[in-house]
Image 1 (spheres, rainbow, N blue to C red):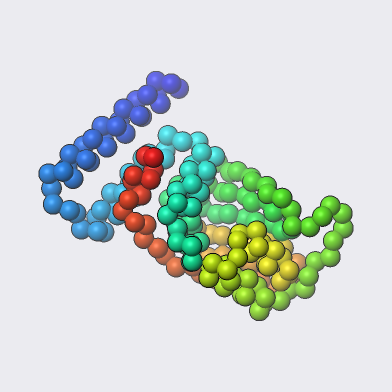
Image 2 (cartoon, rainbow, N blue to C red; image 1 turned 90 degrees about the vertical axis):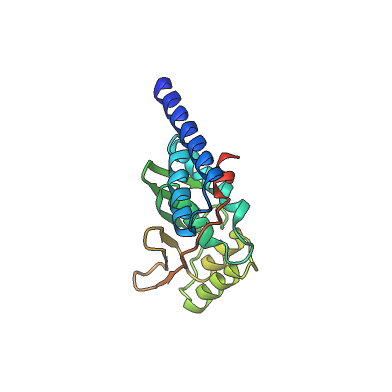
Length: 196
């Protein structure tokens, strides 16, 4: 195991040195090709990490580079590039499940309601959209966003990072709201952020 890890680290170091030498002596690559090389480099650097470490590193990078307004697509793109394919949230318990190429993981944050039996709000599409738009505009924190959609009758939501779709569900199967989020291109300094 340790020998395989050492060999992987040596290969990554050699690839990085080779990439740095090529960049030092060649004119800048077109941005599309450069983005492809950076995407490949992200995959190589992240492959030595466990699935849990990949998720944590992706969050760390995303919170450093995403804009304050409209930041979710950046977080989603970095999670996707780190191997996360889907994310499932259940409310009000605030359980988040990550389906990844490297295993599946669960994360719990404090629940939105006190212990015991609590009422569930009726699904209100307008309030769901308002909570989403407020979050996109940077008017709410993530916990405030969760409270907003919970109060609008949402009991779970699913994020598909391959399709760039989020579906919000009420308690009844007929109550849901689906929204696509835009594709974003990560700045070229992502390589430096990954090695930091």
